[in-house]
Image: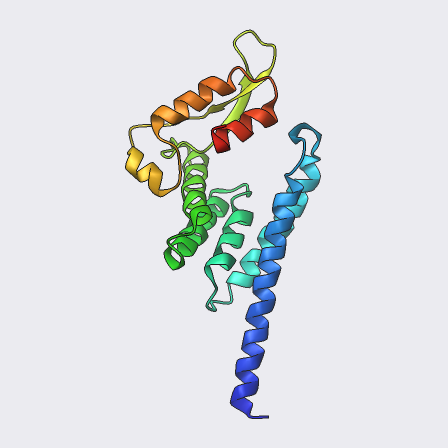
Amino acid sequence: MNFKLLVVLSLFITLATFASELEKMAEEDQLARSGDYEKIDWLAVAKDDQIRRNRVKEILSDNRAFTAKDYYSAALIMQHGKTPEDYLAAFQYAKKAKDIDPKDEGAAWLSCAAEDRYLLKVNKKQVWGTQLESKLNKVGTYEILYLIDFDETQKSDAEREGCFLPSLKEMKRRLNAMSKMKNINMQFEHWMSGT
């Protein structure tokens, strides 16, 4: 077999292996968060998240050409980090995915969500309105999700639309509807879908 062909084939196999590993890790990341929020073992999830983040850093430090899906998978994993650097990496990877594939709604949304997480982690206000926390409702009977430290003046509705986010008016409508839902999983579903 020709040496050049062997090198190209080896490179292709390595990239395919990295890509499938990134996708598999992203699937594991999402699976760990599925189901009833209150029944998830978050300590176990955090431990596995750290292992995945370390592996993403190893893979992407190779400086090879990765696909939009690779960068999206990496961003999805990194945005479940703990440090500003994790969130900044998630933002950068999601932005690369969006740059490679401008029609990728998930990458567009994730780039905005990761930017918000980064801003909050460095003690600034989020600008897109993607990050929620929970607190007891006004009468203290159940938890509700709400937007934390949100500066709604920083981004226009047109910019939000570019990240596949709802308008400010729609966000406020959703939050109002969510405040009347006792189940936090239903609140989150309504936040994401609007229905």
